[in-house]
Length: 237
Image (cartoon, rainbow, N blue to C red; front, side, top):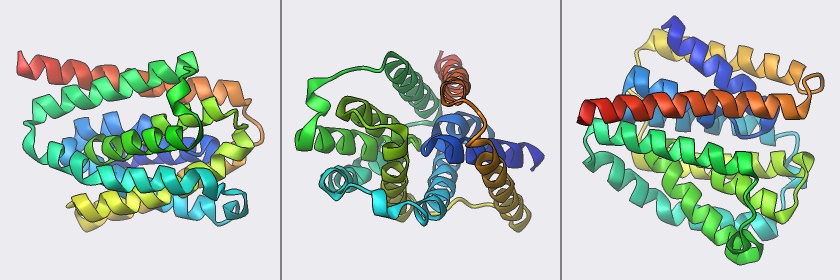
């Protein structure tokens, strides 16, 4: 239970620092601890709850012209992600999730510039990819991050829009996948960890250099993705 709380605390702290870091950091560890299905739905629940709180102070800076097509496309692909998760064996899911997380981190590190991720078409492409990834692997943020990079958004512009996206896509993912089957003490530890992580993240937000925070998040995510990928590959072989 302490390990579960530690993972959630770290993910919550990172989410408050970057606007969309919970899944990247926490999902690889959660799927190793709870299994792919339970790990993904817990990540959906926690990331969605954090996004609701985070959006309360920044909803006026949400860009409807970009977020409406992005979220609409994400909602359409959530069922496909759920379908995949329910039909693949656990080793294949571990390998697939590890590959998705690792590839997403490497693309973000490169700051990939992709013409297809610009304008309304870019919002639809990023949303569709994000919805599928969020429902299947609990990691729907990277396509939105890449869309923001190609749109030239600043961090201040990105965070409230990322929170808005997190509320919508995680709500639909939870509706499709259900909620994790945790015991009452586990739920209590998750709630406390989310609260403490949010307080720490909020306190660090103005003190930790943005570049350092970003590299820390991506480094943790890459390590987790590679671990999940290795475990899945070993189980298959």
